[in-house]
Length: 128
Length: 247
Length: 103
Image (tube, rainbow over all chains, first blue to last red; front, side):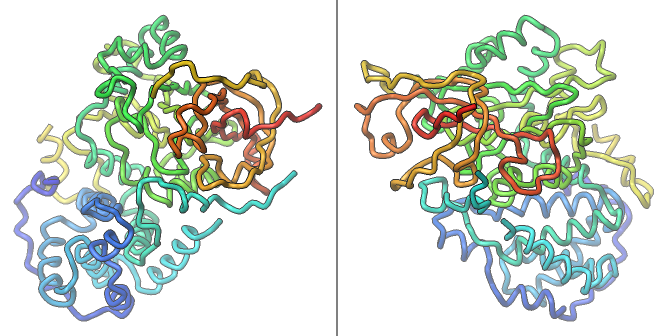
């Protein structure tokens, strides 16, 4: 999907260096290492991408469209994080961790809120 | 007569399409980030649904033409509700391709579910991901996910809200669990504000999600939009306007 | 799918009939969901005649065909505490998975 290319190249992203200090919540998720490339073969699934990838893409696009997080700034920070904290993680998971990291370090989300919401989401998905 | 209300996780032993049937923290993180962003007003659930649909769409679905024709031609609508497979041939969709008797997963039993102002249908397959492929192409990722399959039958209104669709309680929500050989497509209500539109114009607003039942068609939304565009909550010069100009 | 001269079990139900979903043991393969077992609903449509999934899964093409039905349930009958009176759910069964509800 090359949706990003529809973004204007204008507004030279003020190359604000990303905050690359590890975030405990995200470190925990990264260390579990339940990445799609490891899980898919275990379940005999051949789809190359995790099902949430397109939703993550849409979240990034929505954040850019609403100007909460311009696409160029996001990708710049993704690059920096991908070369540092999340260097060993494959692409879709790396993009997801990077997005959460950027939103946390910019105060768009708080770590407490995110932790609580993850618990709530998990119990909803596991509810019967 | 109330049996134990254990939810159906029983499909594990059946030979449905393989799924990663494990909820990972990556999946949970993606949902949590999105929901918090929506709650903070950075974007809406409906906007997110539209971007997702747009990203997955290969082109206007054949089903869109079917709906538009039913909206403009009452006799065709009657034929469609009576024998949908035959009506599909009128718009050039042949359910017997390529095997002559329907492909094993598409079969030949299409039923069109007609919405009314007081009845809204939404389609799921709780066992795997049965879907009217000759009309709508391949199913979207979320349609195949255990999250949707398990929850839409149990909490349909909550799940529809996650797609940005809130229906008043007077409207009957009818979930169609497509567990056997029938395939289903929703015929939505033609929206107000489209009175003088041509069939071609109408087809453009009937997006895939409207025919699954997780969205409603509206006069301002088209399936071939370059990309979904909405007013920026905190506008940055250039961004929004350029996306508009790209149409 | 061949539709040669396979036998067909006589259909027992018509649109509008009240039926209950039987809670038969799962013999290796079924497409009858757990969440509808034992719940009563109304026949909404007669759909087609075909092999039942339990035979089809074993390629028993000579097995008798059965009528399939779409059954409509009230969500309140499926789930305790379901909050919306009017909401419904439909799903499909071959004849043998249904039993008549008297009255």
